Image 1 (cartoon, chains in turn cyan, orange):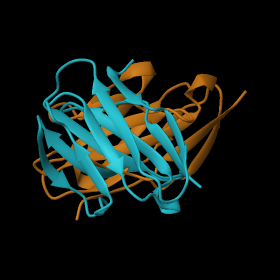
Image 2 (tube, one colour):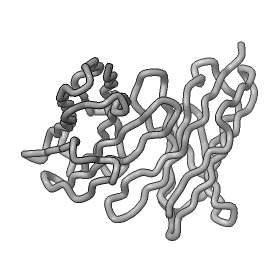
Image 3 (cartoon, chains in turn red, cyan):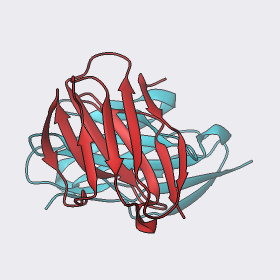
Image 4 (spheres, one colour):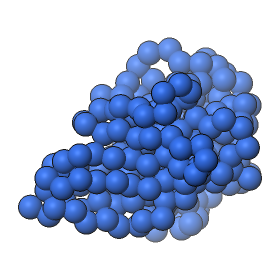
Length: 109
Length: 113
């Protein structure tokens, strides 16, 4: 147990639909990160929060992606108008030494 | 630009044999280095980390890694592999002010009984 839960664990959606993922740290962490991992690759950084402030976004985070951390605790990642290329595992991590949640696997049909 | 290279995509070893997974990094400053393990369909579990000090670091599950600045390497080792070690292993460097991680492409370990 890494102290980070992610919901849902799996999501299948049709192209063009919107999806939202949630990351819940069990204990307080100032730092929260989102990564995306495609098949056969290592995780790639998407965005970083320091408390509720989104301080860095990767160029991978297109306009269709938005992330929030409204109270500095849980975080959500929304993808609008999903595309097949969005199919991946979305990982949340917390802490200075990053502890990862189990991930949300997205499949876009 | 920062980068991490894991030269071996797949490695197969027999149970009980020793293991070394290679990792090379490119980073301008003193790096923060990590090894993670990932079982199929799961998140990443931290094995060990290097920030400073002793260049040989011990981790969980009997793993260790050695930081060699002159070779820009941070290789992971285990003296005797168990069948349960079969998984994918990722090396990462912590970069920039936000300490986002840059990962290698991973090495998939297969263990023969």
